[in-house]
Length: 206
Image 1 (spheres, rainbow, N blue to C red):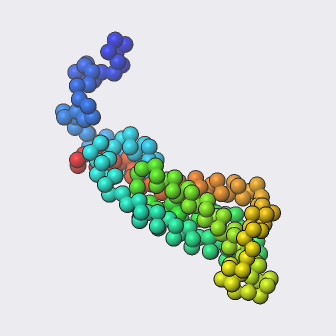
Image 2 (cartoon, rainbow, N blue to C red):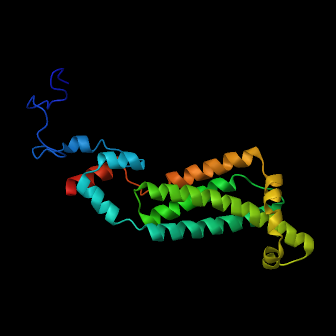
Image 3 (cartoon, rainbow, N blue to C red):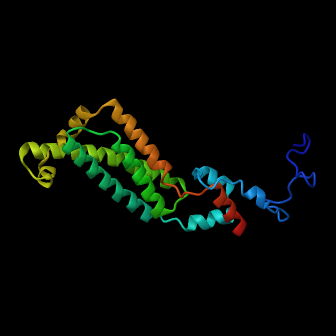
């Protein structure tokens, strides 16, 4: 840090005369080995570290429609599983919300390969909606058992004007906590996983 010029190069003692990359810079292999290759970085960190050309290439590899479809499918499966377990045990297991959030997030990650914010936002919304749907399916399942109906029949015969009051009656503060965590996991895991070392290798190849 030079008080008059600001940040300067330690070799030339001058300010940078390039936009993104210095053509004279070579990464020391010993330093590169210190890069973490185990923990995936958050999306905004990835974008701050990655070269602009590599970023454009990764964005071209994104597939939002496929990621969205995968997230919705896993969310629906998770909702049915949560309802089935709730009906079988006659007890609502809140931790199922965490599994749904993670499942939705990972589905979007692997299918969509996304690094843009829309992937995380979609993961969070789908995860929370899947949790609500799981609760609703549980209510329908209990109603079907009580009336001796098939699940599908109960689903079509249900008086949906009573849905909101019933959901409010069965809702608790702890549900809000689990939904929030599920949404956070759906957001966090929806992004393409890139470690510090992988970013360094991609930047070097471009």
